[in-house]
Amino acid sequence: MMKILTSYWVIGVVFLLISGSALAARDEDHLTRTFPAKRLVRLETSMGTCVIKTGTTNEIKVDLDYSVEFSGGGYYQPEMEEEGDELVLGERMKCRHCRGEVTWTLTVPERTEVRFETASGDLEATGTASRIVAGIASGSVSLTDCKGPIHVKTASGRFDIRNYSGELSASTASGDIDIRACEGDIEVSTASGDIKAADLSGDLALTTASGSVRADNLKGKMKLSTASGNVRASGISVEGISSFSSASGDAVVSLASSPASDIEVGSASGDAVLRFNGNPIRGHIEFIALADEGDISAPFKFDDEREFRRHGQYYIGKSATVGTEGPEITIRTGSGEAALEK
Image (cartoon, rainbow, N blue to C red; front, top):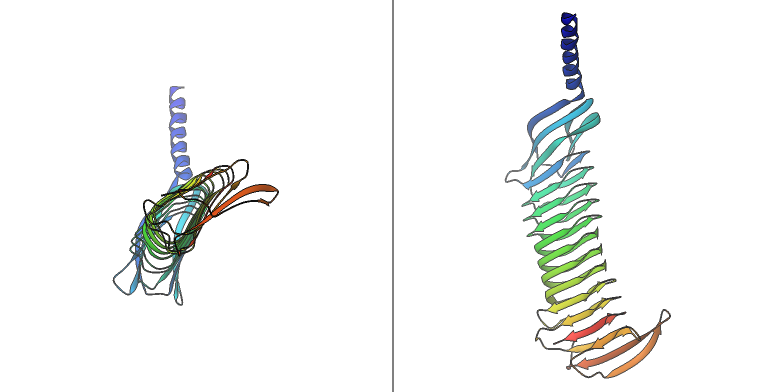
């Protein structure tokens, strides 16, 4: 009887080992391939990180590291094909449940455009000068020392952007954005997350639907806005028509120099404050606030005061022209304070 039980136990262990290996198959490898320079590299994956670098030779180098585990069997097979002036990269993968890590490292010439799409994975670009277009369902983005046009969207993930120069469009549905030491035509947005920005110049648009915007040392034409949160900006040099606004929160702007162009600071239900920090106050300045709920304050007398109706509500408007020449300055609030400080 003991021998029979022992035999069953051995058979069971062997069965479990065989079943376990079938349920947890793994494909892993490291591949390196080199291709002649192309106009475009296209990478499409269901999972995996894309790392982009600029090379010193007129060729494309692809390094692929992958380790993918399958439950219930399956396979992972990378694909690399030349199609005219394009290099097409991707994968064939079959699995019911799989997990693992896949990293594609692309070293490309300066003029080679890269297009990347993935359901789950990050994008990392360092020292690139080429055009990059990416769409990510779930993953974060890191851009360092890059120039040239970059257009990236992610549904869920954060952005870290450092030392960029060029035309940038970066958006996330859910995630924070941290951008520093950049110049050019820059537009970043998040539907749910905070934005932190420092040392930017150019045509700047920083917007969030639900979150705060904090900025320091910005120069140029700018739009900073949030629907739900605060906008706080310091060290601001306005050199193009600019606006700073919050629908539900405060908008506070501290200037590094007197505005060279029109500026508007506004909040629907919070304070709107413009601080000149000792710089000369000049321009035509208008304040607007709800008649029964908002307040207006300034360190000078007003030339005109009026009450008017807009969208079924009554507002107070006060204005003054300070100095001989200057931009149009508008400070508005609904139920908070509209203030200009020396």
